[in-house]
Image 1 (cartoon, rainbow, N blue to C red):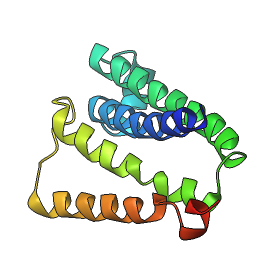
Image 2: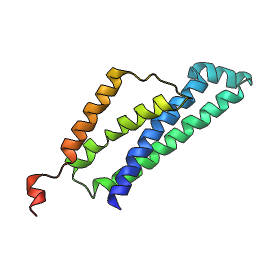
Image 3: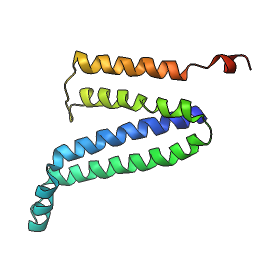
Image 4: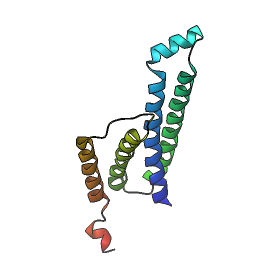
Length: 132
């Protein structure tokens, strides 16, 4: 169960990033949105953008609350590096979700592979843990 909660925190954090990015693409500059809001001519797309941003903030809140539980049940030296799996999820989401539509490049992908290797090294049980 604790691993599921760790995964929930990671996924919610990544979704928070993706949702806020999608929202900000629809909103544009906040000053433009607030001016449109004051003038009473904010577009439907901007309102949906605001909803995406709010959904992202809600995902972050969930991630934080679950993370507090995770901190009480994992060694920090294991749990914290596993948060970097969120970078992988955000990259994949940004590339695969047409609403965001970021580019897939070899350089970015190589960086993600390096993150995965680092996470694998950190998450691997230590010799002392294997003999317990």
